[in-house]
Length: 353
Image 1 (tube, one colour):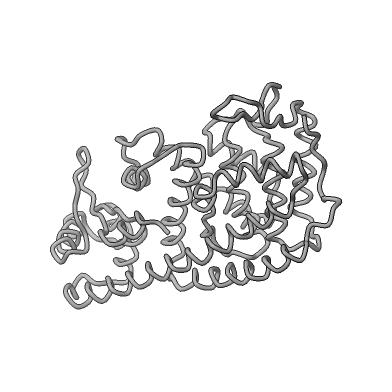
Image 2 (image 1 turned 90 degrees about the vertical axis):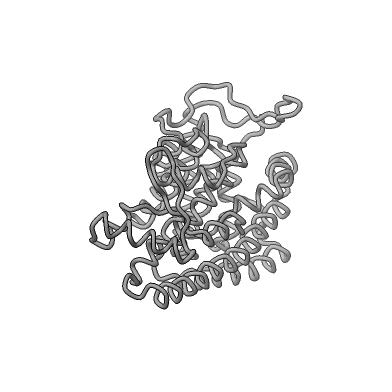
């Protein structure tokens, strides 16, 4: 078993290559944070991107969900699969973490335990029983044995909590890579360590004021480069190869920031186009609030309009039918409920980034 050391690391981490990469990554992330502010209601972005992140973060652990299922789960429909429910739990866990960090300006051990409990929908908490190890899914060979006893896990988590919250001189993006590695190596829970660790990434960037809202969505990059992700995690443990791991994580942040900027610009353009179309073709029903409802979720239903616009069900139904008539929405029947898809937004998000 590899003994896991406390943080901070003793070796020189910020090599010339790392520092150079950190400059371009910080710039891309700052641009993303600026662009995210162009969408008037941040809930629009959070809903769309969190569900994307949730879907892909769960896919790393092989929970595959179709987008249709996903957005239906967001509307609390009973017909969804367990996979879609798991994705919904991921979204809830990320948003819970976001509100904890915003409220307390800290990311504590107890917050991480709470996030994981929402994610897994149980209170098993930190591992108390020995026997957990990480195996190669093809050969069954044990690749890594994390700390086994409860006290050691607790001590390592307390050390990680201090490292996350106490200021140091290392670039926060480099710290994010170190924290992610340490958390995955402690592997404190029976289940959901990967997804919890990826939520911690986003929350750490928010804690350090590099992001205002959780819109950086790293799971797609990690899925695309999955073999490297697991190889590099392990090579830090066996060969102390920190530089390659940190460069990998910086590249994930940089490339994802640039792709997300493009997606946000596309959502913004589509909102303006939709706004213009409704104000020209349906001026009597047009309002900014109506457009926001259509972009809050790719699916909408009568209740959303009734609640937000303060109108009757009959009027809401008339609005939605008129929006379908001019080609913005398309209605689908699921069980006994009628839903309306924002066709272009749905296709944009289905393509992903």
